[in-house]
Length: 341
Length: 285
Image (cartoon, rainbow over all chains, first blue to last red; front, top):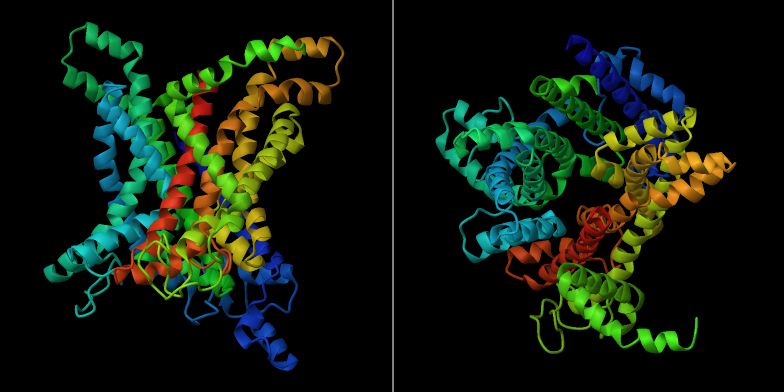
């Protein structure tokens, strides 16, 4: 087991290094002009040259990469844990990502909980009764939920529940403007307000989270449900289930053990989706102005803010790889055969 | 072909078509949607009743007989925009899917059949590409190289090629040990000929299934990029852009400029997914 984890760790580190360098070179290979967007296109050549030097873009790409990784003078580099300074705001990329990341994590974790609560029972039920009305309805739902863009679903929910019914708050952030935000500890609004003992902020934050969470869960539950059904069907047809049934085990107990056996592929898909959502929740974050990691990356890209783009990509990659690593360990614990693959 | 063949075969044909449609309604619906979207991609701008890029009515008009889907906040006819948008959305997604499937299949074939350093390099590069956050990579490629259709196609193709490489390579790896490969080799065929004439046609199924699905992904990604302002530029009629520019009106109760393009996206993606699903069932079963 230790060797297994060690090998995966080495691969992960190499991947992170490769992506870090790839994104650094890729950004600079593309024909964007971050200097002109900062000083304006009519700036005098002197001003332009000075701005370019300030950003460090006057040096060769390799020398820039060296500074980015190893630092220069008093400033530490990436290898010493410094993600750099944002070109747009002047504050450190690490602190900006630190503010944005918990928002996204809170949003997508809740969405996955809701999606799982919908998808797992439905997937199990349809696997046991294939071809029935519910199965067909669920199949159609899966096709359709995946076909509509999630930002559009979000907007439709806003239209119905905010404009028509007035049940939901306006999609303009994480708290109502008149409420004072709880002291920031974790960055996740629900946890922070509980820690501060602010029940009013907790309810308000929850109300603001409901529509975005429902939107994402709606999109996510389609593929999860499909995977639950698929792997349940496979397990239900396997010899050990037949044996358990023949031995007269109660159906409840049989389905509990099939669920465990069918869990592997579902877990894999869920963690891949989770990694994907770290950057992929951006559209829903935009619709509801939540200001998470996705929105931060949009802002960074549109501002040609290279250090921030590099930071976001690095953080998302590292997080996804950590999730995959934990997943591999979990799967190896669940199923010894996986260790030798 | 003899002269009698068509007369014998002909009367049966429509009958068979209807029977096939009845057997597989999902495929039929999918094919209709795909055909319609390709038709609109070719002729949508020509048959649009009004200009899709210039105001043709008062701003924010409700759907009516003169503006079937109403007008948006700048007075543009929503219906004309919706049927002109496939020129961008569908063309873009189909081109990217074709480019990435052809590239990915060929690269995957060589990487799977010839197990040399080339295979290692290809697989490691696609590993890195696939570990990137997709949306952010797409956004980066388009925004930093210029927001136009050409760059969008390049970006989407780059994003989707690794999927085809992976699928084809996996299939090739199982095919290369089949006995027909050995027979072909025993007949004295060159390795390249075996790879392209014999293994390639037998390894196309996964890519064919993926192709249709990829078109759907491409449409969703194009619309998503436009929504956050990293896609095509206004006033290009594009579904995501239409939704994005009318999102603020929606909160005020103007539903029509954003509902219709969203429905158009959903139906188109659904159509391509349904066709992909049908191909999967045919090839799989």
